[in-house]
Image 1 (cartoon, rainbow, N blue to C red):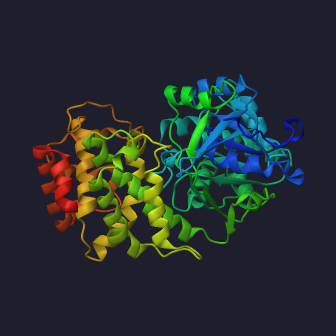
Image 2 (cartoon, rainbow, N blue to C red; image 1 turned 90 degrees about the horizontal axis):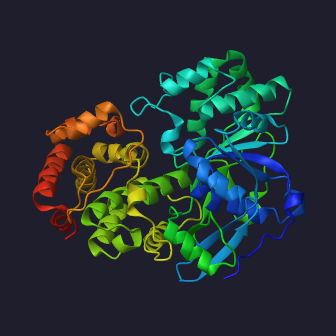
Image 3 (cartoon, rainbow, N blue to C red; image 1 turned 120 degrees about the vertical axis):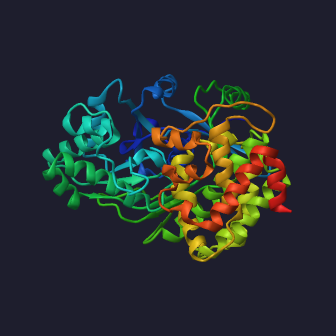
Length: 478
């Protein structure tokens, strides 16, 4: 399969966007839309400068630089037919560990009108109980005192904005592309809190010169393994060190609030709106929450790929019942959206053999995911005296996954929880299962005081430990 090459000259593209976090999702989503847009000659000022800030980003930076920042994106159809694109919209790539001054200078560049972000749900440094920015974090404390030598995304953006202000540059939009309810509001709270604590004058400047649109993003994009790289390169006519593959479904809904102008992404299928709330709620409550529900029981059953898990009818029934019974009452459909079709499409997307996402990726960072995807609707369900069976089962499964680190087949595994606290660790190891309900991920609800929930949860904890996940799940769905 020969990649569809981009129909523009790279040398004609100017950088108008800085993006922090050049992971697979960004390269399958925002870069994909922008690559399509750059075909329009009047839109070629919107190339994207990628910025990587972590030591672990060294490999992707070197790989992309070795091939002139080009890479292939394989879009895997649910019908078994794939399309491969050569992406050229990544115009520059800066690694902050190597050249922090260049990061600051690029953020301050007056040609840059948008600073976009994929820094993960946990990257906004919000306290899980209060949802306020954590100024006491050691790295944040360092950046507050060391303006010119930052370590965090907050320090880098603050220093870049300070330089913009001092140079009299125009304002800029900070566009979050992370899976968070009202992600623009979240970004605004995080960045303004940091900046006001560091520099009151700059804090006043951003009130009139920086906008933070909310957005909703969607495209399942697995991690790329060495085996995937070999497989994808067999299909293409060149040796790509950093290929990406994704599903054929894609969606991006953005609040139209760009202080310094924006690309005409609507030409490529992006939807602009005055309010993204209904779209966010639908996606986070149905797709992301269902992914979380699928993850821990599937992993404990021994499934390692999502499409494999979706061949397990007990998993499919669990997800369908969760979406139809538990969540649909709290999801008003956005305009022109058929909710039944959306849910059926989700089942098809999860079952896409060509994408074959890792269940471990869905399990990763549950501490950050539960507060966003599960707890808001759980609070409504408790208030409405709804059946709590499936979510009690999920939380019992999560505890077993974290505490015992072995699945039903006896296979051990490492957990990936970068934001877990020492207090969380103590609660996980406690032999009293009710202690686990005080985990930082659940702090928005005092679950230990909800008797109906605790009764179900404790029974599931005991049954999973004594009998394994499989018979417990069967008892729920049958």
